Amino acid sequence: MTTTDSVSTSEGRDLLSTTTVLPPPAKKVPVPPALQVAAAKRASLPPRVDGRDPRYLALRNFAISMSVFNILGYTVLGFEQPWAWPLFALAIGLGLEMVVAVIAGWASRTRPAFAGYGAWGVFTFLLPAYITTLAVNMLLYANDRFWPIAFAVVIAVGQKAVLVAPIKGRWRHFMNPSNFGITMTLILFSWVNISPPYHFTEHVPDVFRLMIPIILLTAGTVLNSVLTKKVPLILGWLGSFVIQALLRHWIWDVALWAALLPMTGVAFLLFTNYMVTDPGTTPTKPRDQFMFGMSVGVVYGVLMVFDVVYTLFFATTLVCLGRGLMWWLKWMRERRQEVPAS
Image (tube, rainbow, N blue to C red):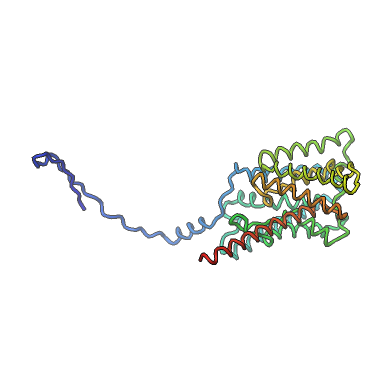
């Protein structure tokens, strides 16, 4: 194939004429089947977690905090469960998380969520289950029986594959994992209890006992303000907690100091900074965060009026359930609106 370019004068004479030979059109080169398979596998992989991603950094710091707190708990603070229980719980929780991922990949004909990026992919995939498992083991007290702890871990990790809702175009779990596992265990086994308050400070000298809540408060505040961005949720929760205490004092004559006393405990700090702010089951917009936290406080106050125990956990469970149902109702309403248009 050739093309000719020329420049002519006003008299019609060509002063410059060039001829360029163009290459023939490129033929479509067949891709070897092995490369096609490799490309298809790569396309089916979930996106690689960036080490600078704020969500990953928050999960990593959560995991580090839980690990340090458990180590100090068994060596210094006074945790009463056997030291091997966290290891057994982790074996169950992490193993179940990987089994669920394999089953989900088989059902959707894709690779498991932890596959494709080596040890880094497995590490980042297991971080949420690691945090959930340690939290459940730390906050439940079942005397000398481990199987209720194992039951709570299975419920907490397994429900993420069952209790899902169409949230912002994606199927996502809506129940706070560790909170839901603890709640179901407390409901089904009345003899199981929450770890007593002295569990966290039993062997600490009085001089250093005050340092524990200060350290937890500082670490949690930095984590939630810099990485998870859940400060509006915390403000909504704390504000509504104080308001419900004042209302119970004015209307039902509850002693104000007794209504506000839970705020001084280590368990309350752990709940506020590390449980109710779970990034995976709470809103992202500041206004929605505030409403979520305020809702937990309102439900807490209502449950306290009816003398319901384990109120922190039950209130969070009910609010998470309501949020999931809200997303389901929104999805069904949008589906009904699309049917006439189609």
